[in-house]
Length: 89
Length: 138
Image (tube, rainbow over all chains, first blue to last red; front, side, top):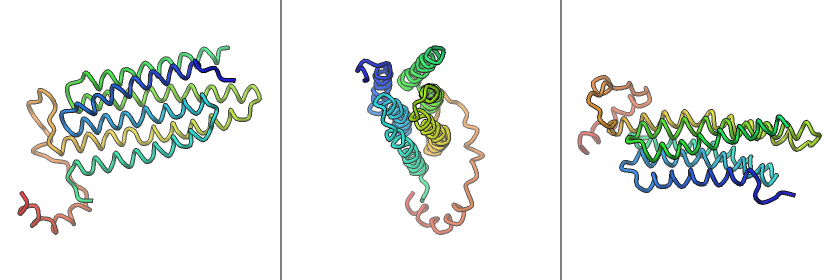
């Protein structure tokens, strides 16, 4: 029904390449906000990858997982930024 | 036929801008320029990637498949979540980086140093309690 070398799998491999480049920045980042920027970029790419993955396998529930992941990663990014400011919660 | 060509073009634009985001994260010299590359390019690329999925769902719905409308609606909600959360997170990271003392590369003058951003009223009430801790700690 779905051939393996679909167009969406090529897109997913390209997104995996982007994630690897962001992981290099997370490992070698000189300061802490560099690593936070890398984590934020990885989160956005993972959300798009989940949507494309759910389309390629024809499973709608993967896209619902992507929505919840978007909101939770937003909360985690805000808390890390609040911690870096040095503010008390 | 035309829908297929538009879907391919949208997928190409999205992948191109996401790869640009990764290259920008590796090559730029500074936190703020890296934030510029890593947030705006992924937002623009994800608009086009999820837009292609929405067009695919509309095409499936046009051909009589009921799952296409569900796919399109859920993809629209995922796109709305990305568009709401991504710029707010980038603004928070930039403000935190400036307040934690990270300067831009080759920066000479910091205009926000003499005139800092006013903190919220919730922090003003808590400064009275924590003044002893701050003077003692630092």
